Image (cartoon, rainbow, N blue to C red; front, side, top):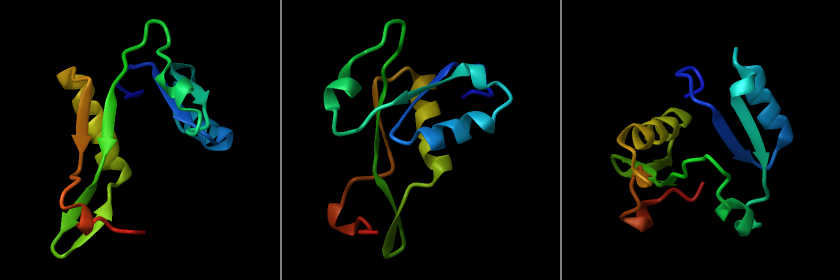
Length: 104
């Protein structure tokens, strides 16, 4: 998304990982790091001014008789599709059957 000209806000717990992400781009000024502990739900629910909020629910992928977590590419692809379609909520992967989800 950064390469496409978007200003991107990244929510995460690890400042080191966020700084590593900025170091990998030629336009780090368009990445805003928001360090939040996911246990502090109220901080995640607060909407910053001039910001569009999207909720992308991450499921899993079933391949044959096994399941796996989504890859980074599948996650980012789902986010981009949600933004392009201008949907407030979307799903990447599947949630059913829940029993098929990998426990890894």
